[in-house]
Length: 580
Image (cartoon, rainbow, N blue to C red; front, side, top):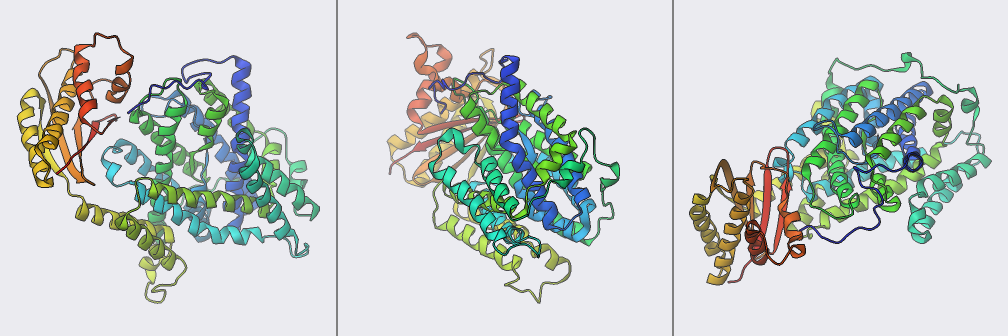
């Protein structure tokens, strides 16, 4: 349930307008927090795949331009496009592995086509987010996080050693050691407000050491103009041949796009928690808007011939530390990104980061991504079923990716498809999780009308479930009462207070660890969230509103209540503990 504790750290909420100087200053700080990561991701992808420097310049220019446009859209929210919150967009680290493979297989045009097609997945996920809540589970998302890190690490270790032949043999190791030492030192010892600057400080320190070995040159910076855009001839276009390479890589891009969607979902939830003085329940329509905004970003990235993008988690830390969540700051940050894209000298300076420095920083980042996957898998408890699903999927992905398993037998299209660990491991975790979910957690369903007349059917439905669980009479009555008050709360949203709304109501129920979890699904009826109403019950006057009585009773009977509001459906999840 939503907490009523006031967050005094928030100076400006999304709809408030800070002074112009504050808006510009905070906007610049957000860009400084993220632009080095944007440059590093682009450098790692393009240089690892041995693409020409002309394409690197174009790719980074296009990435910043798309990031600027989509950051503005996330802030302003155009109908269902954008979150309406301060979310910085940029090139996505999770796309590194698949983009490197696509560039090596067919060049920038193939990669662009794959990004365009896979971007459509995010629009589908956004529109069907409520239905996909059982597919994109913590087990699936956490396992794929770990797979991404495992697959991309070998390429990063190779790039760490990418130094000219006439350079000292200590150049790569020393540069990498200093870079990683700064990252670790800041993470362990620096105050929290300094930790957000660790990427920039680590890269600058590594860059300085690399310069002493002659790994850094600023000739490209000197040759670049002050204002302009790269030659349009650098735009790779789209590969519309849809050959074997396209179809074999498409599954990997879809899996990675799903992972990027998972990250966007998490960021869309968290940004709401840190952006308001008075906490409120998560509005999943905001999350759907954030997903649509990211989908647009990937679509534009593919059309522009650059790498896939995502919402940056540093948006959350920046809002938390600076206390400024105003949409105007997001608009300003987006415009700064667009302006930077038009400054060739600035682009050349950011792209001059030595390869060992960029690769070492990304090794640290993907180590954190791997551990984020571990935490995600474990957030709801790691039982034997989940451990089996995750363990098998990780090893299946690794075995196919590193050709430890059936390397001679898997040839042709199937070999190309499964040889990518993200594809084989990602498909494995989705299928294994679905099979075990069906086998170990069967749900029962009741489809009825959202009206007071449905109460009798709901009582019978819930009593049968309690009987199957062997619950005693008191627990059975508690479950039925929770169901009754949930129905009453849904009906009380009707402005006329009628006992029948004409809407359909679906009730799902299942037994989980000695409790019954009920889901009440119906079409949305307004914007008020039951979690928010329940959190403020204690702050109301001594004479309660009659419509709040069902909520007070529900809070008494239920162990937990969660209300998710989507564009197309309302889902209220009620958990009730019972005893035999």
